[in-house]
Image (tube, rainbow, N blue to C red; front, side, top):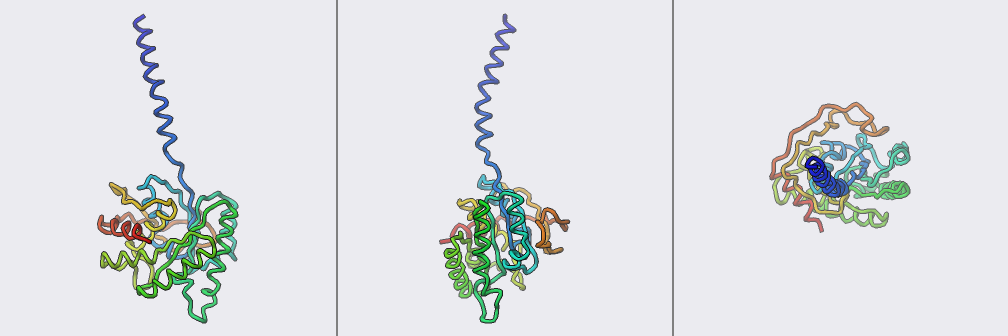
Length: 265
C-alpha cells in the first residue's frame, strides 16, 4: 500500500509538471526565416549572422540566408532570377533588399542608379507575392550632408514602393558622432563596427522591437566572405565558405551600435 501511495504521489508530481513544460515550449518562438539580397555591403563581415546574433538578444531567433555578389545591383539580381527561384524554393518571413551603395542618390550619367528605385520596387513586389515582408536596406555616404540627402531619397522611394526603410546610413552617422570611430573602411565598405551598426538597425527593422545588447554576448563566428566573394547565382549556404572570424567587438562598440540604431527617428 505504501508503495502504491508513493507511486501515485510521484505520478502526481510528473503530471503537474507537464503543463509547465508545455507552456515553456510554446513560449519559445520559432525562428523567423530572413533572406538578405545585395552585394558586398551585405556579405562583408557576414552581416546576416551578426543580425541574427543581435535579434536573438531580444528573444527573436532568426534563420538567415544570403544571395550576394560583388557590386551586384538589384536589377542584376532580378535578371539572373536567383531571387525568384529562392522565393519559390523556400518560404521566408522577411527579405532584406540592398542595392549598390549610394543608390538612389545618382549622378546624371549613372543609368544603373537611375533604374535603382524601379528595380527595388519590382523586387519588393516579388517578395510580397511570395508571402514575405520586404525591407529596404538604406546604405551610407561618408559626409553627413550627403547622407542626409541619401536618407531622404531612400525613405521617399521606399514609401513609394510600400517597403519598410531601414536607414543604416543615418545610424552610422550617429555612431560616428558619438564614438568618434569611423564605421567604414577607406573604400567605403563597412569595418566590423559598421557591420554591427547595420546589424542593429536591421534587427530592429526585422523584429519591430528595439535592438538589444546580448548579456553576456555569445561568441559569434562570422564567415569572412570578403576574402572569397560569394557568387550571386546561388544562396550562400550552398557555396564553399572561406575562413571564419570569431573576434568579438568591445562592449563599448556593441553598445554604441545598438544605441545608434535605437535613436532613429
